[in-house]
Amino acid sequence: MEKKRTDDCEVGPLPSPRPLDRFGFVKQDVNSSPEGVNKGKSKDEFEREERRVKKWRKMIGVGGSDWKHYVRRKPHVVKRRIRKGIPDCLRGLVWQLISGSRDLLLMNPGVYEQLVIYETSASELDIIRDISRTFPSHVFFQQRHGPGQRSLYNVLKAYSVYDRDVGYVQGMGFVAGLLLLYMSEEDAFWLLVALLKGAVHSPMEGLYMVGLPLVQQYLFQFDHLVKEHLPKLGEHFSEEMINPSMYASQWFITVFAYSFPFHLALRIWDVFLFEGVKIVFKVGLALLKYCHDELVKLPFEKLIHALRNFPEHAMDPDTLLPMAYSIKVAKRLEELKEEYEKRNGKALKSAESAAKQNHNKGFSS
Image (cartoon, rainbow, N blue to C red):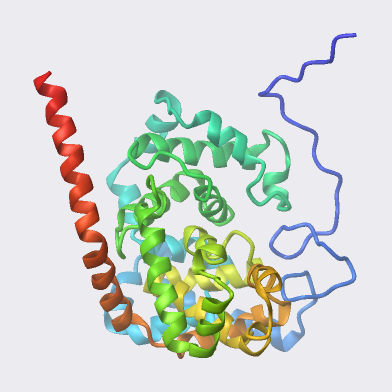
């Protein structure tokens, strides 16, 4: 008997309703009550949140009209408020303002639609294959070929056409998926462009290029920072043959969006978009520092497991982030970047030279 064939474009059934946390993720344990779940706010908490939102609205202005002026006048106030967390109801708009993506959108009318509708991408099958792996427990992305999965496909496909050198890499799905929970497709696309092309901070595209060159640089820098800031743990890692590529690659590729609690990832993204990638290094070091005394006792296999599964109490934003903010890395990151480029410069130049010779041979033959 012939199996019933399912049309690839057919919308799957809606998942059966299950309790959701306040961000739209299916609750793993209905009895647990961590930070991310729907819990009733007290009157005082509600009023405090209302006052906070009013302050932010005043700072932003209508549709973001006052934002640039306020940042120029009071950068320290803006930085302090962002570090405390952007109100969730304003997060999408503020992310667009601090990333520079709103300007890109206004300068490129109709471009996103052109990329989605009229262009084709070599990465389309890879994107379709990976879509169901992106935030599978979030209600927006659960329905097969539903609105969330379609939006995610459109944004990733559009980017793979917009920048064919980068195309598509799996980790990009978690970045685009996170953005889509706070803004429209077109807005999410231009924020992805702003991040990868470096509208405000250094470009992220090297995280997703062939060979992941920027990931390699960040892991080199992080390895040195661990040894300098946490020498006892750094020594233990060396003895157990542990290097950052075994546990920290996804921290950089998805900026903690992949496997960290969502409420923590959002707070990190607030700061990341305003201050740049140094917050990823700071949070990584803060996590290791917080768990230091346990980690130094563990043998290889248990150590790997612990580094990929931090305890819930270690990932409380109100404990972890102040610890991260206190760690100074900016100057050392620059020095380590220069050292990495010197070490790898010769290898890179010889590779480029070989590629150029092969290219020239191709023309002369």
